[in-house]
Length: 221
Image (cartoon, rainbow, N blue to C red):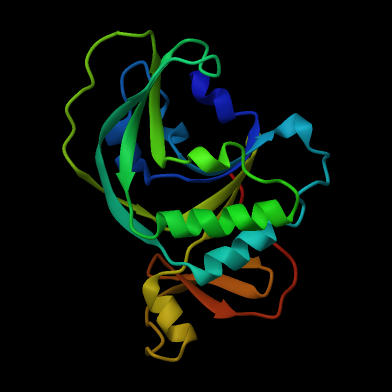
């Protein structure tokens, strides 16, 4: 992992591209494909928080996720941030992301974080992107890039090396919650219990049904 371990010891809420998309985006000498992510809210360094701090934040994220839906869009080009003290004098090469609904999701999550006393860092200068590499200034041109479709069907609460996956329901699941669609058919496989919601998948796609459980069994990897 390169300098973007900038966030490797931090606390954040992020989106991770599917592995096949991440492999297409990864650059030689850049960030590892499994580490590529889109930061929604960066909250600070892990050591700045007490071990029990933000204990309820994953549940609050789950409530926001329940009101949202899986996001679809595309990688729409490259960009480059100028060197700064924060990047130790290196340029930051990144992929631009065009995903309808992403800004609204981010705003809702930022509000929840602020309510819990952990407002996002740099909240007023947010620009959605996926950092690909850190490099010395002027070290080559920005590579050409074809538009790549991208889908995010989970949001992650990340604290240091721990990731807690919180599914974003498919649009069909939201419709079912409102009673405007027939229940989907297929193979049902429980994923996790989160607050009052039972997150499941139908043929591999997230679906949400109301559940009475109160314990969080979100997967972490």
